[in-house]
Length: 148
Image (cartoon, rainbow, N blue to C red):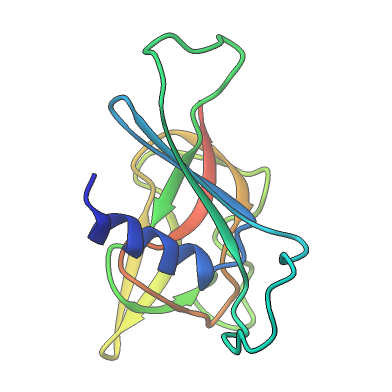
């Protein structure tokens, strides 16, 4: 994995409400966590940004059977996230909902076009990672799901 991709992941996590994120590609696993309390830094830092711990590890192909793979429904475009088709209509999905493949989970507005985002798998919504009317980036996780 190249440095540019890692920097992109860091930016996505910084701009989201996620506290921890894990990305796995083959035998490379990257876990990023926002620290609850940033470490003490010498005076004059001036950055004012939240600190993140980034670790990269190589692991064997054998995993514990109880460890489940975390999946995310990500944004295919840059736009504005809408959880429902109108302000007075219930959200397409909520935490705990079981979703079928092809079911609409949200709308992303880009250049005045409303794009329905559909789920790629049968799954259960574990977390909604963005808030209504939030600006989202390409590849940003929108929902954490568990495959059924």
